[in-house]
Image 1 (cartoon, rainbow, N blue to C red):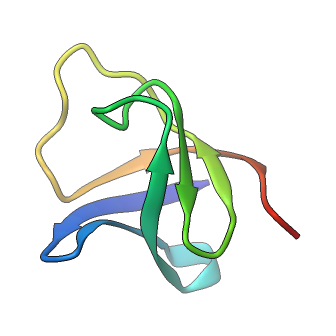
Image 2 (cartoon, one colour; image 1 turned 120 degrees about the horizontal axis):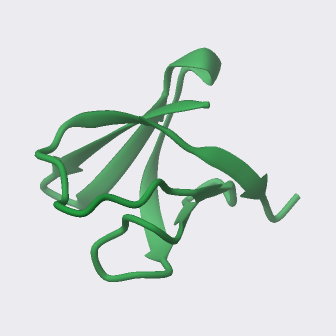
Length: 70
C-alpha cells in the first residue's frame, strides 16, 4: 500500500492516503527506517522498502502491512 513518509518536528510521520491515516513512526527495525519494519503509533507495522541511498523526504513508497496490535 502507498505510504508517505515525512519528517516533522516530533519525528517521522506516516500518511496512508487510502485510509486517510496520519500516524507517527514509534519504532523501527533499522536506524535509517529503510529495509526493515516500521511500527506506527496506532499499532500498524509496515515492511519498508530498501534503498541503496536513502530518499529525500517527503517520499511516497510501496510498503506492505505486516501486522498490528489489534
